Length: 363
Image 1 (cartoon, helix red, strand yellow):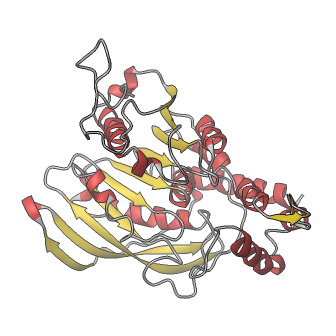
Image 2 (cartoon, rainbow, N blue to C red):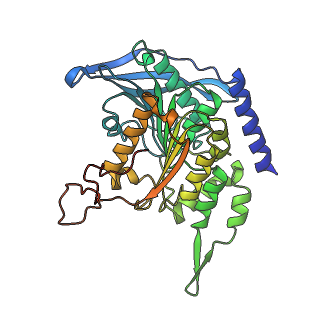
């Protein structure tokens, strides 16, 4: 009953936000530090302010890094995952080397995290909104379309942010978004096993932990158990388990979305990504990687394919050609070229069509 009540409250809040009653976010446009890089590219360290929560008008200072490129046709907002920060994902600026890009610290992560809690996307959505508003108030960045790129918690936070403020982004790229905090907790508790006479069985009391997982009186024990028996490991991050439902929030998203999932992902498995994909209302694509090894692994396991597909998605959004394509499509395939020890790094072309792109079909 408690879970259903919280779900109804969450959906009602999203509808109110979408109807113009959402949070007001103050933006600070002061540049703390700037430097020039190659070919006119500049890097700026910035500070902006995010609302603490739906029930609090207190503001949290967030730090970000902005890369500005001459003649960029879009700006990409990079939303990192749990236990990362803006510097851990610096390599993603190279993924978007034709566009402006911004990475920032979610609350309880990176710089200025004292006294803050991670909520796995619910309150982090205010950080996304504030970062997007910062971009839209920058004289240079606001001239071009804004695209969100998020993975894991960052993807879920971006979905909720777009549901709250429907004109926030022009498109989103969402890698391994989880479906709901309920199911995420289920998957974590499913890893809790005990061995009795050589047989593995569910840990006694796991059902009780699931039922009361959102209670503040149970959370300390729950986090300690998950840290002991699984790879949860939130040693340096204060976590508050709260109801979060990206699979419901996505139903309010009508902009183009590109979803990426991996069949070997234990945190956001294929069925979780597809559940979120199914709820999206606008133009959408989904790529399920059958070769990835773990959570958020496709970008490392199939980097060339990954870069091509992400870049191709952005380009068809910017030139408007996506409007002439099939509105929804799921692709589940293996790479056409898998490198093994002793093989060359030159991609092989498909037989019978030497001009076909070796990185797969177009979106």
